Length: 189
Image (cartoon, rainbow, N blue to C red; front, top):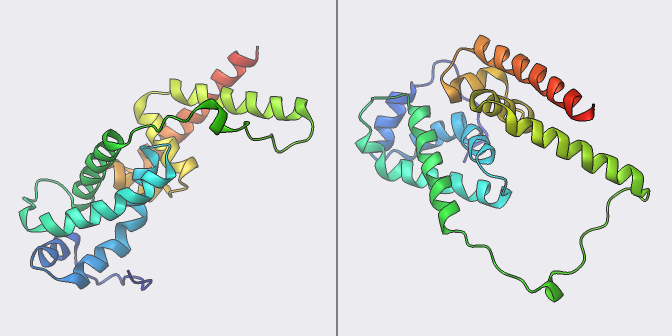
């Protein structure tokens, strides 16, 4: 779509959605400009497969185009988009089947980037420790941390995505940081 930035006087999301429902491609472009990166970040936060995260937004926007006329206004437009994204991630995940590869074809595991085995082992251990600590976070904190740290969304965008105040996002990031530090300290002890 376009790289053009939207101006403050641009139409509201609901107005654009109604125009999309009537077949207005420019309205779809406006909404994509506003939320394309958010939809992609949301999909990426729901899967570890980057390829899948790149496929999902295309299906989200196609589904949005096809069903915009049916929007009942019971949620924000962005919430509706993210609901479509969540369903698409789920659908894509169910469709994916792991391809079995005989061990002879799989090849040797990739060599660590460092030539020093001790350094490589410490890096892998630190990553595993942090991953374990992230998995122990409550769901609300984990989602905020993934969107903020892994997908580098600003707090204001996270607030829009999760429909919570920006202050709550900041508090959750701070609380998650504190819990992660405590968890890592316990695991290192």
